[in-house]
Length: 449
Image (cartoon, rainbow, N blue to C red; front, side):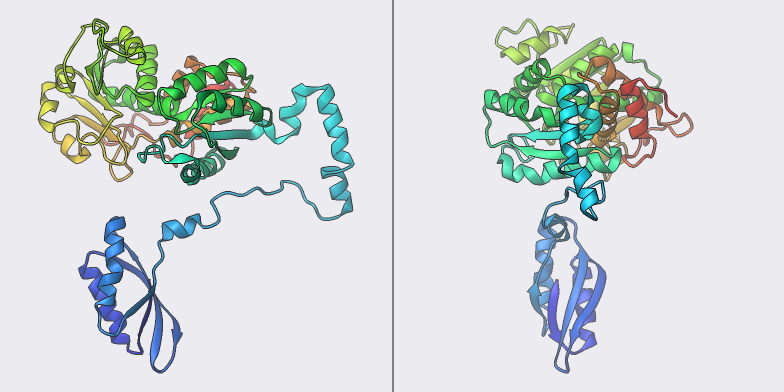
């Protein structure tokens, strides 16, 4: 906050005290301008959430003589002008540099690539580039907010690609939610990219888009909301079961949420050897003997729920070893957890508000994970997608296979050493220095140096 105050240092102290009493934390106070009559003071403070932040200027203005001149939010300030940029990797200092980077030298390279298209990834940015494609229909927990409002999220994704895997990624926000148009748009831009990362596209449209693009393109197509989530969930589950001394091939899982993420998690867990998964959605437990199920749900039910459990999430949880939620806030009641098997594992992954408060779940469950960064065991896709694409690009892969996903999950799980593993540490931190490299080498099949 930029404040105008009387030229009295006691007023500045009163502002700091008032903010502290209102629950804010003052981190800096700077006098930016001073006269005999007035001070201009910048006060930087932290708040608990956006609503709390909005109340603090009023607290400051209640101090006698204080005028709040301007208020800024550092998160919005960080986004001014966007978060990513394009920069040249080669010097452009003189005519000689230009003659090689651009005309006439670039013409020789283009002619060579026309004759030898297999060299395009080696001699262009294609070999290290990913398109982050969205239609803005399922952005974070915000829903269908459109392509423009989705752009900051896609920029952030591109920044993560660069930070963690040194991959150049571009946000592509399409102004259509028509499946045919999305598929065709991606097909048209594909020659400039080494991979396609589909992002925040609503189910079930995302399934068809991914399937059709995988069939038509000769570069890998990866839907992070599905496969990135599934990889990290399997990695975390692998280590959670190590903690409670259970085997993947022996456990029962109740999976709440039959959308994009839930379906992909289910598919990868089945591939990993989990024998018994009951998927629960808004219609209840999905069972193959329920003729009222929609096409997508019926297909999922045909491959799961061998005991034909019917009813609600509460019914699915009885005797289950693991709960995995990718659904909605507060759908898991704490008193249901004791009905699960001994040493239950709870993954409450709805974001930003999980299916159950992780602290509450921890009173009953042996291991708890969530999508939140303020609790242990954060299930975060950043652990997967940078390394996955780094490996795909390095291997010049043309597709993403289930075997690759399983290897990526194993690589993440194994970065947690035996002497580190415990109920509060089943998954590495997103800044763990070895994760991206381990996943990349698992995907590419190349030995680590």
